[in-house]
Image (cartoon, rainbow, N blue to C red; front, top):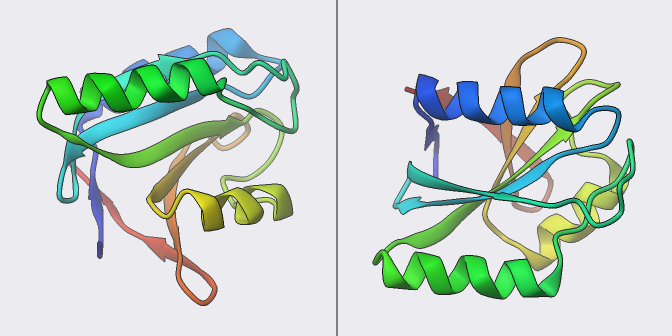
Length: 129
């Protein structure tokens, strides 16, 4: 994956969801095909933390089931950083190893989205519409 395609509508949904979840991080699973996001599955941050997020196993299983039913794949994990830049934390990097998909982060400070992959190191990829 060299890029991720995320529509303005999806960005609006994710940014509004993130703002509504403050002061805690928000999270979601992104469904699609290849590098194009086609659907969002907004999930609950069971940690209710401003610096970490965890999606419950129940919601993860539900997400993969929905993706399969819609004949899509899980192509991304989304979460917000309410009080910092949109760059993966050390904890994010650890979980990126377990979930080798695009990670999209929304900054509650800068109000921007950035996307990353973990290869041998963190690699930023462009977000296109």
